Amino acid sequence: MSTTTDNKFKIGIFAANASGGIAATTVPERWQPTWENNKKIAQMADAAGLEFMLPLGRWAGYGGTTDHNGTSLETLTWASGVLACTKNIKAFSTLHVALIHPVFAAKQMVTADHIGNGRFGLNIVCGWNADEFGMFGKPIGSHESRYQLGEEWFEVVKRIWTETEPFDHDGDFFQMQNVRAMPKPISKPWPTTMCAGQSGAGLDFAVRHADYLFRGIQVMDTAKDELKKVQQNAADLSRKVGIFTNAYVVCRPTEKEAEDYHRYYAVDHADEGAVDTIFVGRGLRDDPNLSADTKAELRRRIAAGNSAFPIVGTPDQVADKMKQLSDLGFAGIAMGLVNYVEHFPYFRDEVLPRLERLGLRQPAATA
Ligand SMILES: Cc1cc2nc3c(=O)[nH]c(=O)nc-3n(C[C@H](O)[C@H](O)[C@H](O)COP(=O)(O)O)c2cc1C
Image: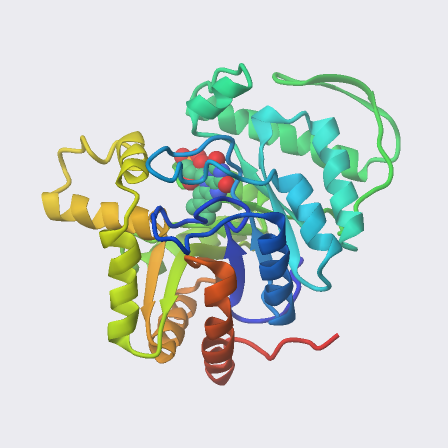
């Protein structure tokens, strides 16, 4: 697997290209995804030795007071910009594979990979949002057919990246003649790929094709067995997959300050309209198996970090929680912060040294 460091526990910045990041909140310091802000956090993360920048592929917002995620920078051009202004960090692009032709995508990704001298990564999204597909005039199709398309799309892209002779392709989703493309990627055999599929089909796709698999954590107790099973499935195919999760971090000098800030942005100032869209869209509101308390907790997790894993506390507590994730078998996290530029320096100065002392990370390379 191609990574930018050998750190045992890798950390990436998640969703800095989209308004609000992963926090559906109305607080005035909520994240504004201007290019200047993105450049700042990318360079800060790079200098601190973080491993990757992972954007959200979004075409429309979730509504509410802020139209959460309604403003977002397109992820291939964003990744190219991030790679041009950084030295070591990897930048992913998040692609809805049904919405971008493989010939065009393959060339754009190679271009980004050259800009970054082999630091480009691809997050494959097979799709779930019918409203966004409608913007492209495309029916979303069945869950199964979306992963079948993803499979064919990625097979074609890999051929474009590796084959030196022109080829034809006559598949279920794509018919192409005399396909050829130069240059080839700098990353060998091709750029790092990730997939965040959660369903059986999504996991199966990730195990067969991805270097990084993103797995949401519902309950920590069952995560270890789940992870082992995924690793075993990958090992059966002679593959190794790094399993990551998405997490939001609130880190303050005292536990009370961290909890107060958590409540302030994710409860007192939750963007309830946007939370509703996500809550209803995922079928949670009408799920008869969920208690009122569970629903309230799920709503808070959506506001706090789009259902990501909560890491809230003092620098010691945050570092300990990351150690627990590492002990469960997670290779790292994609991290959301309410305001990346304002909140990252404290995390960098207080949590990263603790992770080094715990043996999870090395100091950033100075080159
Ligand atoms: C960490 C993470 C990042 C994701 N990023 C995006 C994204 O940027 N855009 C998107 O449309 N879906 C995104 N997804 C959704 C997944 O690609 C996938 O569709 C979802 O987890 C449902 O899994 P399934 O397709 O196996 O049902 C993300 C999911 C996770 C957990």
